[in-house]
Image (cartoon, rainbow, N blue to C red; front, side, top):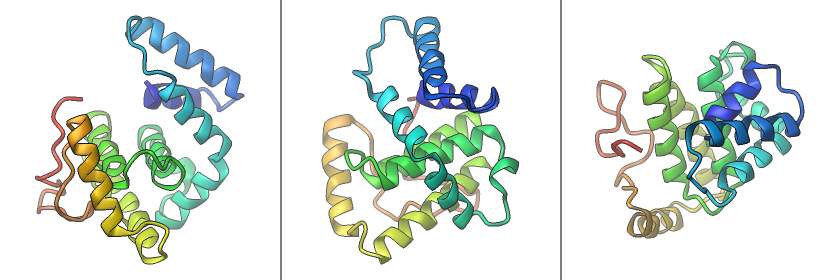
Length: 176
């Protein structure tokens, strides 16, 4: 719901946070009226809205050949969610955030979206590890604990390790 709502908000011209909340509420009523995510989507969207300039600057730093307004709406908003979860949402393990973004790109993006998303988020992750912002061993332990609790499988390899098709064969999350 968060990605769909963020996509619509961006496509319609990125007005206020209130507009984003209206879109989110509409999407829940229309597509998942019985689903309660306990405020998760609104928390993610509020965080993205509050940090939008910082997030877009990070995306530009790691995708310098692609001005933010030239990245497709889908890819741009998947990246925004991924960057927010990597940098600011400490309850979500980095590897899980990257894998979820890749899966969204495979489902909703174009043919090369998952490679693009993986490359950008993987480079951000690598820099965060190198700078000490994330400790790789702690991240692996968080991901392993998340795997036991959520059913999401964490890859045993770096999130940027790909096969020749540009996919991570060990990170397939199935239909989410």
